[in-house]
Length: 253
Image 1 (cartoon, rainbow, N blue to C red):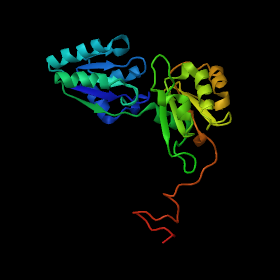
Image 2: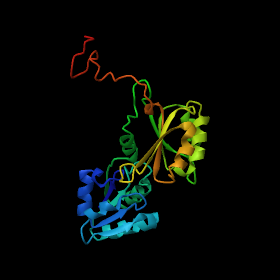
Image 3: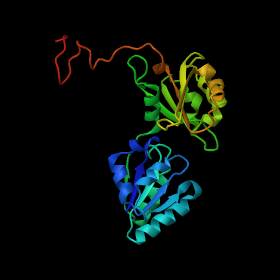
Image 4: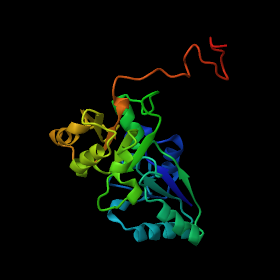
């Protein structure tokens, strides 16, 4: 059996209870060493086989899974954050499906949630934004033509940009090309959200590149953009005294 497990955004205690339990009983752990906190490996059994997938190809990862399955062993494939976002899990699952190897998927806390926590921010503020766009800047990995950053930026929604800090000048240019954001639109960069070395940089779209360079952030960071980082919004209807819900009668009745 193969268990895909989300490791969470960085802090070891942010892995789910289910994920931690699977690590404790695993016979083999294949972890994304470039981003997963190695402290999580402390949950492994003394005789657990541990592989760092940052040093492996897809084929090598799959070979280890096959060997463990043939031996009746339990494998945990430990991915950063939540595996559904930029986790490259589909290509693994498709092969496991084709070969009849059973697996399941345990979700984790994504780094975009960790970034919001680091900023004490809410992505979906009434009258500001009710939409969160999660994307990346095109680099060595292309994006579909209709998903170019400038095109998505035209919506003016809350935006969370992964895997793009090394292209910060191009990110800033694309955000402004979209037309909805201005140089004064609030933005922030969060380095290693929830890790001990976490760092946050608040800026604007117009100062995004310069602020990132000034903070010497070159990798392992998220870029967040939008009016949710500002000060203007309306309170929610959910807790408005005048608003009636299934659970309480408001003064509007």
